[in-house]
Length: 279
Image (cartoon, rainbow, N blue to C red; front, side, top):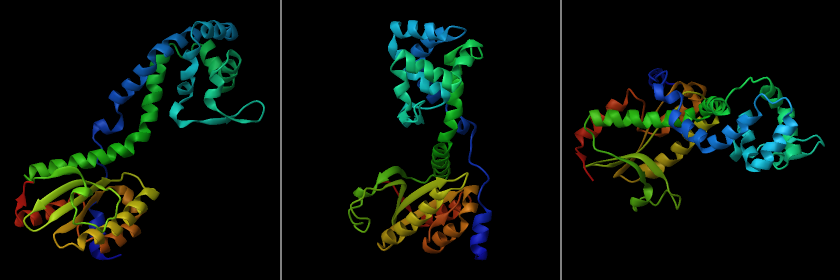
């Protein structure tokens, strides 16, 4: 590992998480509101000792109310979860929600029966709100990327750099080396000398995605840089890279314009000497 790359890596920040990174309450509220009527109807089961009778009564009133039972065990409907039934068959979870008998089996086998009887939960709308908060943690990686885009935008704005966001490569007809695939760049900056096509991302944690990203950008950069009036720029950061530093170093040696949130100032100084254009 070269000393230059070691220094580059040592500059990576510990986090880019702002307080709104942790939980998206607007999305959570929206998810709960979509099923709140059915959840309120399911509240009828809370405290009932004779659940068989209660399920039958509720089923006769509105059989569709049980369609939201999956979220009560923190499973989203679009996940198409599967399970073993009592006959040893693999079935979709939502097949339990079609008859009073299978609904009752679901309630008992999942442990919800005791939750209902003992009133461990007093309001299913509030309960599902809590479940949604927990499930929302899976979306944090995406918000990390959004935060990086915001951070880079703020840096450019502060430096009075004109840019466009989320620009498709199709508008650059000269670049035929990327093939027929449509690629959207996070930022595009144009100077009198070059047009800079920029990707920006941030990784709080490791994973195979980092290796894939480094490999993909190492492939894209030479295809763009072969055109003298274009240059590929990658701005990345985050402690997640420490688990994939070898692959990042390979990219560092291939991509001339690779920056982090500290060295991005070097890029800004460079393009200002070239005179930034509005386009």
